[in-house]
View 1 (tube, rainbow, N blue to C red):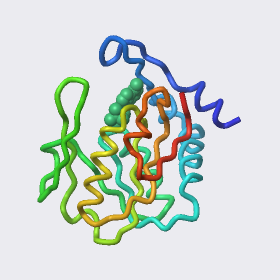
View 2: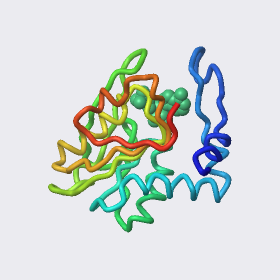
View 3: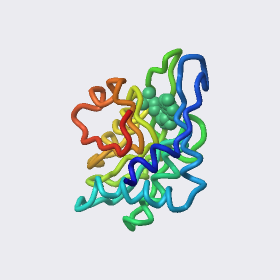
Length: 173
Ligand code: AMP
């Protein structure tokens, strides 16, 4: 079963980046070509048949999954970056973290009005990060066709936060 193989390769790192968090380390999958290929194939399965113009990859592990998917889909890849990293005109959305806030930015010309957009990140926890990305796409006139995650922490109500957007994930915990 591809799902079992993928799950077995994920390394749980307790208390990273802080106490009480079990960090899902996906680097063993990235460094094993057949596993990464399987992961991308599984994620593409969730959007098969949908017309997609742009993939938005979320800083930073979303870039890795998003780029691989965009290459297969034959569409552009757009980075949604942490504040202060993009060089040109940007729009931004701030969101709550456990302590304080964070901000995601996109270039104002990254999405064209009416573009069908697939948002990609490695992991869904609270949904705050991906909701900010979806709001950026909305503001630029894009149509969010799916928010695709490799991993979903289903014991956290991230999906509820993303209500109104289609959400898919491959590995659920
Ligand atoms: P959230 O905004 O709470 O949905 O958090 C999602 C972002 O934080 C993603 O970009 C993940 O890469 C990262 N993240 C949150 N929790 C974890 C975790 N337990 N393991 C690995 N990455 C995580």
